[in-house]
Length: 255
Image 1 (spheres, rainbow, N blue to C red):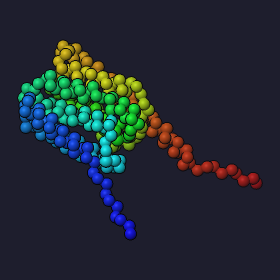
Image 2 (image 1 turned 90 degrees about the vertical axis):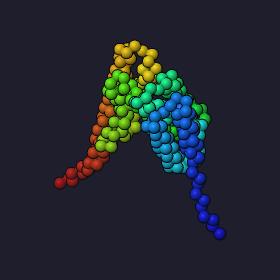
Image 3 (image 1 turned 60 degrees about the vertical axis):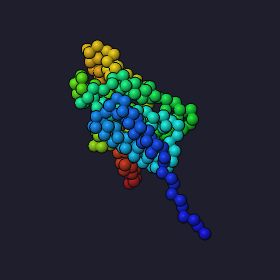
Image 4 (image 1 turned 60 degrees about the horizontal axis):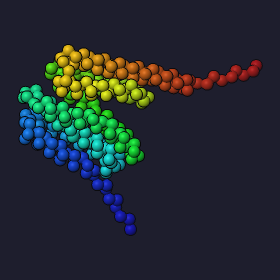
């Protein structure tokens, strides 16, 4: 007699994380005060985060997140708190020390998850993508906060990543793998450092403005260089396909 296959249990980690996200938002609302819009932004962020993570785990055939992804998920929950505070700041004063502390911890933990994954031998494409998307969203939220004081051009610091993804829908060659470059990591770290300094008001106004300009300039250079490399690589691949598809000339028969 053959027993019917039992469906695998859904991953529990995202639901636990959602509970932690709601608890953090409740604590911020009680201690610091969140506007309805800020609270709603945090809740929506948490729901989308946990839904996408659960879907990613299911696609990967996993029911557990692993230690490295737990670290990344902890950072992601902190980013939810940052999101709620930044949206609240649009219409209500917020605690800058609290915002800087939460964002600073999230930034400081960047790289810890990678070290944990390498030491435990649990590196995965899902973990790398998860880490990258959380970094990108945190930079976007902080750039929005900076834009309220220095001009909305600073949002480009956070929007570059999403503009690149949108462009890849129309230009599929942008989806190709890039060679690892240390400079790319330096530029990414610079964005977080500059935005953290600006958020904490640790720089005079013009120094902060200059730092933001430098950060945007290096980011433009990095994305421009990578886009050019991907374009040239796509032309090389296209030329190779044309050579392989071309008919092989047949030798002429002797008279």
